[in-house]
Length: 224
Image (tube, rainbow, N blue to C red; front, side, top):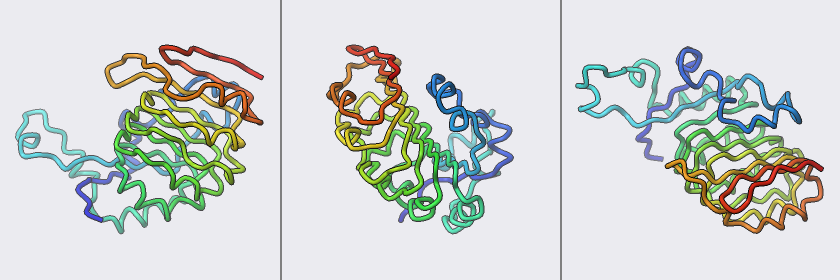
């Protein structure tokens, strides 16, 4: 795979930066129902970013974090993921190719997966391979249009998606074990969009305990 991204896995960078505590963007109702899955430490955090341009390097306030903490060596990324075990995984800035590249490294261990500002990931079908997955968070994705096959995801309980304005196919939820759903349709400009999916599908979810929808045409917060 051609890799034009700088990968940052360094614990020091995350601990001193704005991504130290990623729960800030989560639906906070989640803490009432699943506190152990809401406030936790992510054992693996990965940031993918473009290499600095010449203009960026010449800027007087240039931040050299990509040179200091980054790597383009994907074998190094492999080692980092295997070392940590990737039980609770936080991904920032990943595109589709990078996500699919690391799937074989994380699919057998990951329980909580957080896609934070990964707008270029449009296909989550690879998640059907994740046997231990309990919880999927997404923050800021305007490419995703459909969910993945959850038929055999017997451990999956939580779907919490913020700023997913293009999602239009959620049929697979009817055959899932998901208990907690939060979806909102805010776009990148902060405008609330209409829901593009069939809301009646939630009535057909056999295990649903909590539902929160925040769209232009639907605002629901309901507990069963």
